[in-house]
Length: 309
Length: 327
Image (spheres, chains in turn cyan, orange):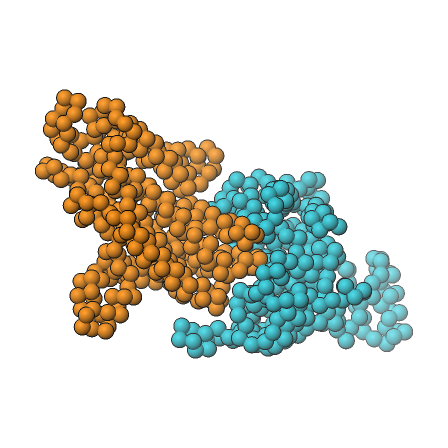
């Protein structure tokens, strides 16, 4: 990795947040002494059950909540810096959108907040609506959207400024399996192009597929952190992958392992996980995607274009 | 310049979102329809119809305006913080001060539209109300039923246009109806301004009582002040407490002269409360109008200064609190 790739995008030291009641008495410690460092181009997952402090952490990183203790350096500045927020894309947990606006109005509005020119706003809005598969609902009020559609629009607004850092709170929540897969593929493509991604989730399969590193939080404190390989590797057992064998071949392999290595061994067929199976079935069934899902290769091309890449 | 463009976007969105809310439309329509029906509901036959209609129209303007201002302010801030849209916007390159002040401007925009509709309706209903006339060979008490009918038609037409736009083109019913209503009222003024009460051609606008305009402007200032109060309060508490406190402050401010003003000379508490509470009586000059007088320019200036200084102080307080607020 070169120096640019190694540069730290986010540095959090001893971050603590205590929520207080109306009388300013401490009510709950949502985050307690979190240390976190994220490098450019990484996908880092904050995992944990509900109430473990994931969303609170993200809101502090964006300057929406004021930390009780600790320090945050994000893209070389403070979370409150307007210039820093210009380089961040944020997808809130519940795709909080203005319910009486249409998707086009929503994206045009956010484009104005990023001070994009009228031509840029129109172009990016049209492209992102097309890419997220919302063209058919472009004149409908967002309040009438399903959760999955709102999530897609939320993702579109997060990508509007072609951000250097993408902060996603439960990005696949509410999406169908195809939508989940597309979002995960998109995030991987974005990271490969240098976008840093910090996401939270309690859907472990999502995180397992795309995250380079994870931090597992419980009760506001980090309980485990590291690369997935380091965290998931077990010391006690190994897997040997071979092409499918017939019954005789299987017996010979087991005999060989037992005799030569003097160890217990078993053989079973390799299997896909349910998501891989579902995606393959749907892909076979649908020559063209009729459910309104966008194409993430288009999004990657879009980001390349707006960044001048 | 970028900040200005952001402010315009935020203020515009705030006004649009509030105008699209069904509750806001309901407040607009009830207030304007009740005002339009006043000349037909008040069955007074001693030549004072104009006075009663004027007083009632401005009372409706003030009372419904307080609700519009309070509702718009809480929708713009409290509900956005509760719903999470404020967090989504503040994660963009928007400073908190700008967000808060732009929201206030958007709320003032809604209040201004409401006041414009109410003011135009007041001008029209005052014209409709029965008056003694001696023109075109007619002598006696005469109601301007044509203008009254035109006004009711404008209200009905705005609802129909809103419904059509919503049904056919999926456009938001609320904002389309309000926009059409405003356009319809302007059209009514233009038509009514060309005729006298007997239906004869007259020099344009000579038959409308323009002395009502300053009265309407003063009520609008009171509503702007109430918006600033509601915005400042919304930084600390939620929707329901904000609306409750606003109602209480409205009542106390109306009775401020009686409750605290008369004891102000001898009691420090009364003097302090009298100074702190906004005094809505400063913005109610209907009695002066009914006595045949006009609202003096200096009075208008002083009232504007009072509303501006009071609103500025409340907004400064709101900005300081909002900077520290967890969103």
